[in-house]
Length: 439
Image 1 (cartoon, rainbow, N blue to C red):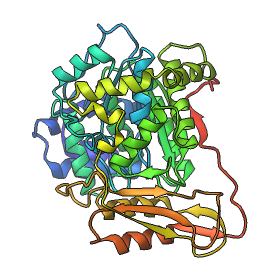
Image 2: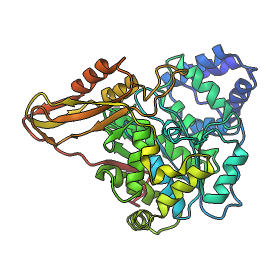
Image 3: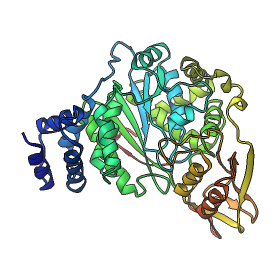
Image 4: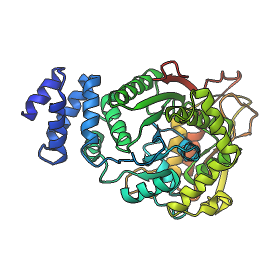
């Protein structure tokens, strides 16, 4: 079997066999196949695409390139949730404790901020002492003890994906749906889960801005999960405006605690209850999704979800006192408002610009070496459909350094579209893929 023949085969639109894909992934992981040949293959995949069978085989090969967790001795169903990323998307910090408090096991391997979107690990690390760099042994120990742990990827999990992702990043092949699907699903299935709930974002603040693209990726991931014997469902959710009121690491932890305390923004609460309901349904805790919303809400009403988050923080070395005293979290020294230039209604927001403003303030990274400022971020005082008067605050900037403040203000001002007519409100969850009539 020659690599050049497989590249030519895929370039001409041919379908690769499982054995051929295994040969390529094993060879690349062991450094027997050089970067330049895999780079050529990735470009051929970008242009020619992959069949469902090829994607499932690629996912499986990447999954088996490293260790996989065996959680079969834990009695509860293992269910995770994954989001494709957005602005103000702190659902993992809320949904994971809700699900674990409801007797599911949630082995969550998360990522950092990417581009204009925030990352779960960066939010968790704004909690003093919180350790996301656990060994798989410690990860498993905490899962057995409290039902949930949230960590970053390790060298042991899907090393093939790490190498391929780095190559995609420098060969303009990041946006291949087949490669995105295999990357996400290999990491998630390596967790040893029984089921997975996907939150695929669409809109101005998402990577997949067109709903058609989001649906296409969701369908690929659901089908890949099915072929690998897992129950997978994907919610297509709105990211045409930020989720909740806060964007910025410590500020999003505060808002997550507010939700777990029974308060917080209605849109964030609605999406978290929907995601949790699907987790309870796929985890066989309830017979239908509507019935899953009751135990999800109950975990908040009774305080069990908040106590579960406290336990997770404690077991991962963090300051659990932030649950009762959020003021212990990092707080920016200065605030300034961006105001409305006219009377009217918020017709639309360019959510990507708002995310880039957060990055400019220091809440995200421009390079891998860039240090995050956990305290900075934005609070959205008006959202789509809200009425405003000239001079009303649209957004409050929380900042420490004035270095990029003017740039952030310009981005925010440009992101709000004020018109004379109220905007039609869009549903938060636009579609559900893989439900098979279960929604």
